[in-house]
Image 1 (tube, rainbow, N blue to C red):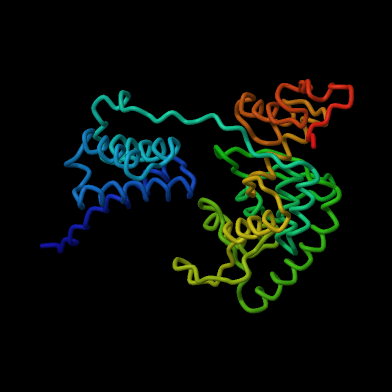
Image 2: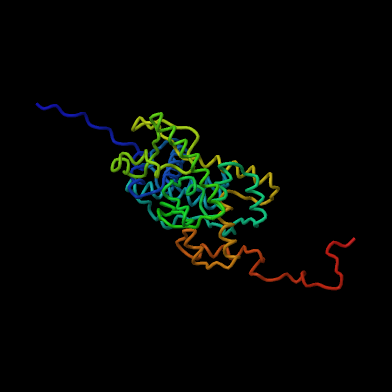
Length: 336
């Protein structure tokens, strides 16, 4: 009798979830967040398999997050979305009355925006590559990971444009590149080119490619156009190809540098890397740019998202002038 191959074990729950998220085009960050919530859900219920649990266990987990962990409404919604995906798409057991599971109300907060003077102070406290990243975040309205995952081919220094590939929602867009940043960017790319050539001479020079491009174009990963604009300082060994591959700069490095810069600049606002993107949009609108143009530059699907910035323009709420500014007669704001 012909020998039969031993039966292959069924993939684990997390592996099936990862495969399903990849099939649906979820971003790596979303996939990682959803996996984390699945693990926390199982641990909360002492390792019970989700297949033998259901709506009641999900509700208890959400109640624990809300009442014991005091997580925000957006975090509760994130956890619920991950568990709804688990039961609907991975286990093929949609939760009964899933639409009636209460979703926490997300507060409508205004974005934190820096004034041009504050932006200048923060950028003045950043140095080297991190300052260049900050200039692109503010000057082009990029999200942090959009900036750090730029490839050389995405920059058009002659036309002062940046092509953002697979931004939020897997959408491409074109945004502006400040002419004042171009000289520093040229100098930086020259240094990146020298690093790339040293890697090539040492048998490296490879970077990761999206989707199946590495199979379709085997040499693309070692070509100059596909190199990261902001490469990491060290290489790692790719477990699949066995090659020494260079990743892009890690986001936490820039986030820490930004936090230090905000503190040194003496700014009392809760500013982050994303604050530079908010400031980009607000300052463009304050300068008279059309809101539809700003929407395109930011990559917002709905103009209502861009409209948030009209509420934080420099002239205060709705652009009105405070009555205290028109008081006359020598009124002292701070009397003796």
